[in-house]
Image (tube, rainbow over all chains, first blue to last red; front, side):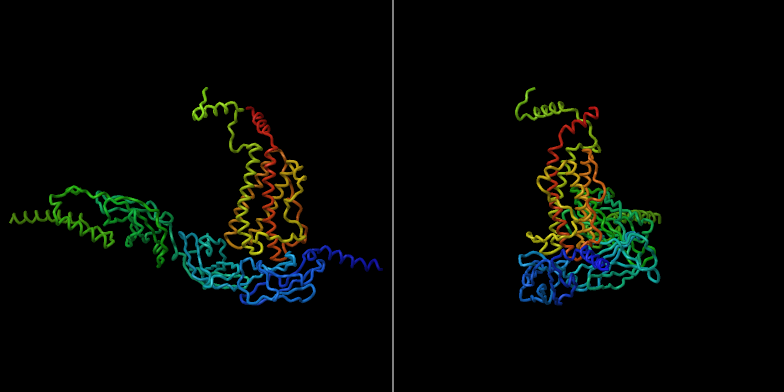
Length: 391
Length: 224
């Protein structure tokens, strides 16, 4: 009988020895790795394993490498020392504050990571854009407080309005730390509901739901094949031509374009806003003999019947061109007629130049129009004389 | 031929003459074996590069763990947990007496294991910057493992098979709490550092031991 009784207890003993790990640790701290709100207090205890023959008075505590005052200690038993921490500040690092129980010679007996912080704030300012209606990238900002001292996980979720399950975005940090990219399987013509969930050890916060239609937030590549060239010998004009962005070329009948240009040695850009949906424009009122840099961008306004403006693309790479140098000689390059050098003509030219400069228009008002008018005037004058003479 | 001191044409001619008297060099493709000597040099260079990278990575990671882990004199106990990380520390005579095969095999096994553990670290490391650095370092470390494998095969040694080192005994938790996990991470980085120091010496030793004859023999075997 006795051997039979002995066997289970021997087995139990063996099992306890096999689970030898706890005995390998000199001490145990409680609580182990707690999560706490900023400002809360904590009493932690360090209990030394009996195998190590240490007493409570041989121990001391440090927090993030700094020794804690002995006044906050209390010996709860011969092998247990406690420490009282009051009004805790937010964790010094997101991996947790290091609360460590030491033996007198400084050796580490045990440690506990304190996670002290705040629950997350609602993420705000969700903005999204779709490149060529193929994907959706959204970014957001953490709540107003920002720093919660705890690692916060953000999850962007979306679903089709009126039906569909919740989907979770997978590709994060594509456009900054608070961003996510949905690469495919997006539907048009039905709005999406989009929101961001922020979670950390102390809780969860959900942003407001943003509703958007993919077609209202489309952006494209910049216009391609931007060419800037002189307009004959005109010294104050340049002609800009471009193609609509290739990806949406067949859909951009209502697109808007914008041009900006600057002189080579200036950083001030002039913007031409009323380009409409043409793919060419003439810049006027420029300085002769100067190098200009020109950029164009596109807004897929009204794509597929969307009533809203889309999102402006990036500017195209700058293209450079120079206006012809002004002629010093009295004769200008325009060979028509013999009254080229009258004061009137010069003044008119200046006037038209001023009009173009200050109206930022792409209109064809200019000295050429005046010349055409003069030609017409001469013709009609001759006709009238003829008519008159025939009377 | 008259070689005047400082005459660049003279020097050029001398170099040509010297080169012509060497065994004819085959037109080596880059894809051909570099020869054990050059492989060893490459591996040595890689360990020095990794050592340099590790300094920055360890600094950043230890700052993430927070004090006291990032203090210069931090010296925690190595608790009697299952030895997951292979130790580079070795008796001097034992180290000297290692055969080339054993020396290379020890390096190969150690870095394969270390790579595994580092990759696991990548999973939950806090900041995006840290994860990025870790990812980059893991790629470089992978390169080192492959480089060592290359040296071993060019010297005709078989690669160590099976799991690198003894498997973790069943029932050993990864780390029972967050603080112990931080200690594991600290020791992982320390061991990595020690291994890179040791490997530089290992490969230096191998460089001297691999005779140039090995390179020449290979050329003759190719009929040049």
